[in-house]
Image 1 (cartoon, rainbow, N blue to C red):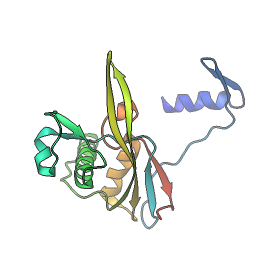
Image 2: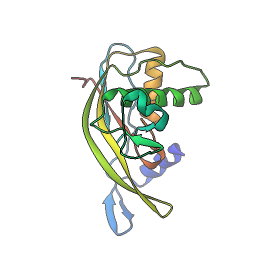
Image 3: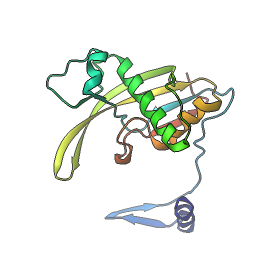
Length: 180
């Protein structure tokens, strides 16, 4: 699929491309290297789209969260401590890794340094229902990595962080050598 898309993009390079009423010119094609470096290079992952983390009802008391109503889950918000965000995000990422790799990885700390950027509310319409999704933008600073932790983070970069990735949430950008 990706190879055929790349082939077609190269075929029409320099030509006008129309999407609905809008016209664009495809000036250049290329392949991005979105590989988290092994070894000694520091890097940073930056959220390109909001990361959605939902905290289930049975975990609210553990995190000291008291919602206004009896919800099945609550979205992590900036007024909560970062602990539930990090814990739920790590559990979600490890679950994805276990399912993808077929290797059973126990819970392990994945994130060492991160920075909250902002919270956003995204209106979403699904099957005639309208809702608002709360997501947050973050930067994750990665120390030099190798082994399984690097593989787990690479899967997150490839598949998305948090929940609702199929709807475009949790897309991450890799910035190599920019971990300051």
